[in-house]
Length: 294
Image (cartoon, rainbow, N blue to C red):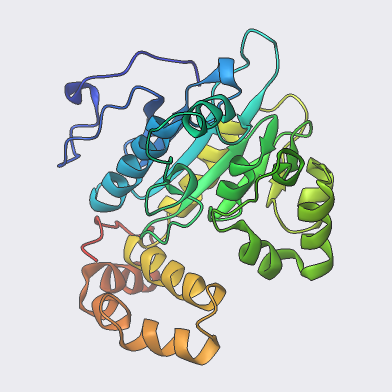
């Protein structure tokens, strides 16, 4: 998608009910009325995030979860920059971090959702990462906690923090262990191994490597449209169950929480989407979903 100037509230889809944040480090775009595309717009810095970008992303994801008219989001990186290099996100803005360390300013602190408001986000609705180029450090931390990830064949993934004396502390260490096992997680973290797109796909870090020449954002939009075809209530409740089990709650405890907790099965049964889905199945037609109230 082309870079665009920050739009005004009037340029957003008219069915939205909550005014969106107007960030300076991000571009917001709506490929369809139900899909939000968030583009990190710092290509000259390889889309490294400074303190402002972290907090702007956090506010955008909070708004996305509260806006009932949106059902799926995509995060991507702008580029390439003047050096010709493409990056989804090459991590923390280390120049800002170094300057801050040498000053009397308070230490930089990530928002509650972690790096980019994503690496520790629980959230309510799914986010797809569309990766083209370098995905390093905090960029890698973010995609390890998105719901789905697709990338170009030339993309690469790494955690180089230890080589500059810092540690990836934004949530990726336990998540990597769950995702790829101790041996592979140790290799990535302790040696700084750079994974190719093919390796990341084989390790289960990436869902899909697109064909050479295809547009990764367009492919992410196709995937998001598949999510939007599902029951909005069902997506929220099922995602919650996946997250609880993945977060270490345990299979039985996570199942009970989804079954009995607020916004779980009871909320699903009370909603109109479950009735519409079953009715559409019986009538052999596509369901006409309404925005989730969960």
